[in-house]
Length: 154
Image 1 (cartoon, rainbow, N blue to C red):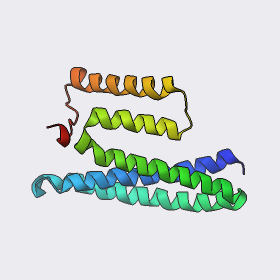
Image 2 (cartoon, rainbow, N blue to C red; image 1 turned 90 degrees about the horizontal axis):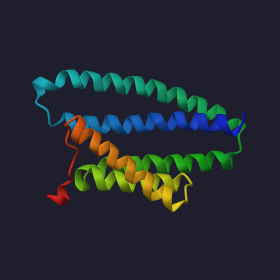
Image 3 (cartoon, rainbow, N blue to C red; image 1 turned 120 degrees about the horizontal axis):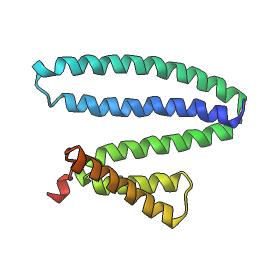
């Protein structure tokens, strides 16, 4: 088993954990809905939690097989990077209502690119700015969906 297979095992595990983060944010939003309207989203939430748990258990079993064949130092490094990415995604989800879409997304993309190993100032500043602006323009002007402005700017 090589490093690419180890990365796939770890990536599958990370995806399951990120899905749990999104499901947690969705569950938090469900408490704000009236009970009469929330039954269907609750069914979807619990079904998603069940399916993700099945996938997560399979990923844990696969990652154990992967870790048996790979250097434990490489596995720990991947686990550390994975934990950092999950922490950054959680911080992003938490900060959007507070600081708004534009600032949070811009900083999130810069930090994620830096964490991924990009050191070019052009890439670290231009790519996040273009991505943030283009997604903002798409949602605001084309889809007419207003993105969060942030509570600190009100």
